[in-house]
Amino acid sequence: MKSTSDLFNDIIPLGRLIYMANQKKDRLLSEYLSPMDITASQFKTLCSIRCQGRITPGELKKALSVDLGALTRMLDRLACKGWIERLPNPNDKRGVLVQLTPEGAAISEECHQLVGTDLHQELTKNLSAEEIATLELLLKKILSESEEER
Image (tube, rainbow, N blue to C red; front, top):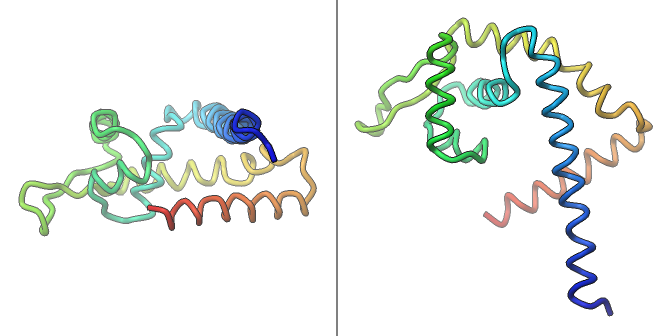
């Protein structure tokens, strides 16, 4: 049986690897998007809004795993660029809904076209097709268990 310190050391490297892979993905995303004057964080925010159509800031905060202050600043920047708009929430008189403007939808689509295949290929260039399928399966398993715990 492993000691507690061995278990702790076995768990940390996996978490660190996942973190480092995410950081690499964000660096690549920023490189691909820099000519369009959009950051990886802005792109991820636009994508989350795009997937939902209309979304509350609270739902967006949860989807992006950011604090509300950072999200508010991000939404302000995106609104200044004309990519999102805030609308009154019909279900909450004090709340708002966030949605993409036509310009925001266009830039989101343009970014998807730009990074879609290239980013995937860059991230997986050292993996076989079978390894990619296994990685996707395992990550989905990790994420599905996380969702069930919530």
